[in-house]
Length: 570
Image (cartoon, rainbow, N blue to C red; front, top):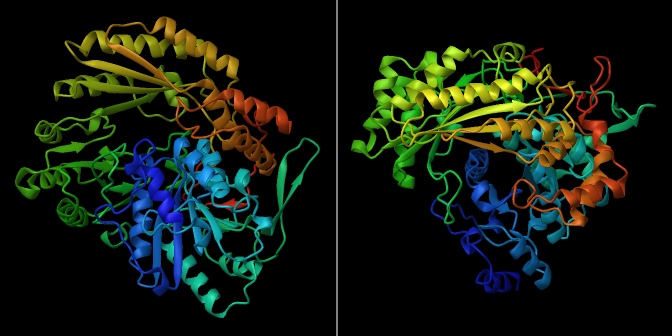
């Protein structure tokens, strides 16, 4: 009944191709003939989720196991959500239109704090109780993973477990343990969670009791002597075996409509604000031969001709010129565009520049982060104004028409001179090199302290100060070849609350959902008045989490997590 009603309402919504399934390279199994069903939930729209390669990797790895079936779920847009509520239709999987609550494991991708309310949207539609304590049955087992799981505390009351770190191997380990439990276990959720807690990277929040001191600071007290810390899951090497060569081709146009090659994971640069650079250490490169084999297979299975090289620092890949040359030789010239994220000036060798001239140019981003050398040195951004200038000049000379400069406002130890320097540097570059139709897009976003970074204890500037700095940029960054873009300051403040939050925020998330917060990661959807109402209803003071600097001896919400020797570099 649900399937028929679901198909009937798709003709009534915008972009129904978001919900059709049946895409090329999608995998359908007979769910009655497998030992485990795994629902992969991406709490955002289809076109965002299908662009995230981590989801594709897990989908491929899990479905490669003959006894496991993995199917996908994406958050319905508000128009479909309204119809689902009216018709009492739950969230249904892309592959078989099976209800979310009927899967053995529900794995939720936690990539962005402002997607958290979308998780509750999907639970609510599926009649899944929000709080883990209200779900007495062992199944569905709800697990979160991704960058936001490195501070899982704001979501701890909703999830049965989290995966901290790389998910490729631990996802299969968890699945096999659950299959064993289904066949031989006692049916008790606590027993299952105890078994899972033995796996590296698995954090079970119900096995830790939150305590609060006189200042309202959360600490965690372990309930079991043999489970006091959690060590992150770590994938020692990147191989072709743990990478999909037949990724799904979405029907609705995704945000990134090209073939993606993850050439490396991790970054050696050590920027003090960058969470990804810390939590994905050490750097692991995929071999040149593996990348060529993956590309050959993927070009055939997808029909793509554009390739994006994925890495935190693409220019640092040790065999980049050879890789690009060999990619261009594939398929007799059908590979006609290679997307290169930020490449530093010192990496633009004559050999590489000659190769770049052969490909169609897509986007090019340079991230100075700060306007002055003094502040770039403080944040360990090893870029000089000379190298920034050389990179802009080379990029325009090599054929790029648009260059993006990424800056942050409110960095620790920032002064008014640093904000002024964003304007002077950007205008200088535009005046010198942005000739004809060439433009420079300047992106200015707020610094948000993130877990497991050297700046994790630093304060985020207030909303009023953020608006003041942004207005200065709007008034002073005026140039015919410069376009200024920014994130809504209110969005940055809410993101900052969740980035350093604790378990007291669970009531805030429920209140925000009840007030109508949906798709808050999209500027046009974000409504700060709804968040203000949620803050007022719960009595949560956002300044407690954002603008206060934490003392060195003060516990942090995520202190239970031992991310391993490569993660925490201070």
